[in-house]
Length: 373
Length: 234
Ligand SMILES: Nc1ncnc2c1ncn2[C@@H]1O[C@H](COP(=O)(O)OP(=O)(O)OP(=O)(O)O)[C@@H](O)[C@H]1O
Ligand SMILES: [Mg+2]
Figure (cartoon, rainbow over the protein chains, first blue to last red):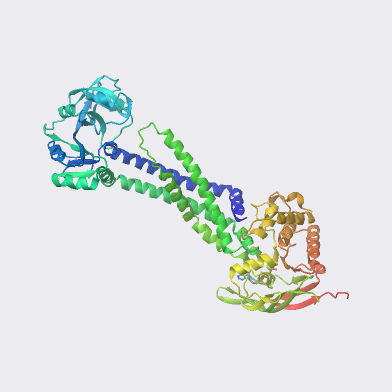
């Protein structure tokens, strides 16, 4: 019957209950929104690495993130071809470029030049056109989210990048990078746009043979290419995220807002639950006098915290789902990994219980003798 | 000879008011019996409520021992005390103390199920019939705020009876009531005390209540100054 008493008390004191639920919703929604944006930005940061069909990335010496890889001699590919575990190795070119709209507005872009004919490391989702259209000498892709930057081109329209002619052959679907506006093309065109010497490339993508041991292969590659950095794909992805997290202050900023949202939520929960218990001291004294033990009072208030937590978490997720759904097509980064809702629910419930500590402490300390006063 | 229910031996209680010790109860020896309505009378501040709280294991005495049916219950752990309270005592307080969030029926049931036990259908029936015996059946599923103070006090008596207590401890249960409701509540308590396994202790400072008592114990300055018992025809 203790849970019934808990529930009845919550329903009876609607205002403080609603206040405490609001605290839980605040934590769930604000922290959830912050973190889904951060996870979204994470996917932007390492987008090229995560979607490349390669197992290993080889970059210039001292590279610490996938968006600035330095330069490598193309002939490194030959050194690799001697290694048994390698299925293929392809040099890729990236270069900064500038495009100019018809109205004259300039826009910085990142051009990725993919090796024909495999076009590996290239775009993976299309709204119009396909990856093969990049085999055309001047074919490029632009992203659906960036169309306006390019003056809303149609397929087949001609643009300029670094004063070189390119033709929009395909529109990619929501491929956004933290490093800049992505334009994919073939390597020949990219070399023309860049001023990279013909024997240089930006990074080399390596695919291992099926069943090959990544660590062993990486060790061998490091041995033959001492003046390059050799990263397994997942390592480079992590490094890239860590690089931005630390160097741009994003980590601090998101960490701080998350902490603040949690604190505000806990304070709301603590204050509302505590004042509500203060107003109900007499009820708890009577329950004690009637034969309730401290642990029974504890169970009642704990039940209240759990109910408040559960309702708040439900409403918070509802709100978060509505928000994420409403901003799906906007430029707001968001990504929710499968594990996140569970961990976040547990986190929020833990904070809710933390917020109820004062209320629990006070309620269990009410003296039964005060029922007679 | 009536059965002894509760025995107090050498009970004293001190309160500290700004570090000054105040002895509120002084060396009290009393015995309470089944089938009896005992009145504890005395002026305000004489220690009546304190005595009642100690009898109900709600407050610890500073000195002395308490026995329930001969068993020493003076030095029990808190949880054990709570369980004994639930099993042996029914409480009726000066002002109504129904929990406003619960219905009348739930208020009665909670006195049994406060330790987290399930409410069996038989208990529900018992609560209903208690309400019926006080003419309160129609209120079973409403919240206490709908009831008058007199009705609430009768609900409190029903709540106090749900566990078949051996002793009903009532602290000025009629002080908030008008004469008519007061008489109704006192008659009810008198009826409750007419049970070979149960006694009633009623604290009051209202002389109009005395006639209901089989026994009147008078406290003054924390000491028993008078203990009068009505002669029973053999
Ligand atoms: N918790 C407490 N702390 C300090 N003093 C207390 C406490 N409870 C009671 N007292 C003091 O003990 C004395 C007796 O109080 P008690 O409530 O038992 O008297 P009472 O006979 O019930 O009076 P009343 O008729 O006014 O209810 C009073 O002087 C009171 O101030
Ligand atoms: Mg009193």
